Length: 267
Image (cartoon, rainbow, N blue to C red; front, side, top):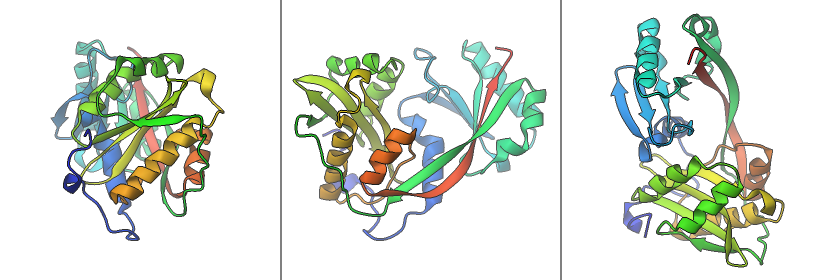
């Protein structure tokens, strides 16, 4: 099974609150599952040269308390990615709330356009109240099938295909696929680390949205977590629709932090 042996799964006891710093660190490090990377004294440089359109696969993560010479760090990042014909993109560590908001001028002086955005963290706080669509069949995916590529293509996100395939190779990855009339129309996948169980992506083909596909996928995922005894779960919602699904599944926003992003303009 793609998630490995049950006794390999790290858990926290039911009812015990997760340490949110584990969630923040997981947000920094999760691309290690599917991307190549080089570590620096100031952070990590993720890259995937055969999938340059994937932001998750191609960005640097830098840490405030490890960055002594900001100008030198930014120069090193620009040189590294430009040498690979990849646009330099930087994420602040999620441990450093709103750091990029306070250094906007410094980033601009080095040629970066930067911004901050709210990143919400959701933890289980109630019952799963989702009513699944009985017409949607959800299957646990243990081995990649090329037919799943149709979901990404129909959702107009082809760059995620390689990310999903690489993720499924990770020993503690998990994936669920939704089918309508034997056709794959949605995917929900993620992974389990020593820190947390993370939902990486919820995707539904555009012409099958608003049919309960996403809700049915999440219902089955939560059922699987309960049956497997997995409680150290967190989610960050990417949009209002996923947030409503997660809330219906029993999750509530526990923390909102300012995520920082920077893109090199001269590329």
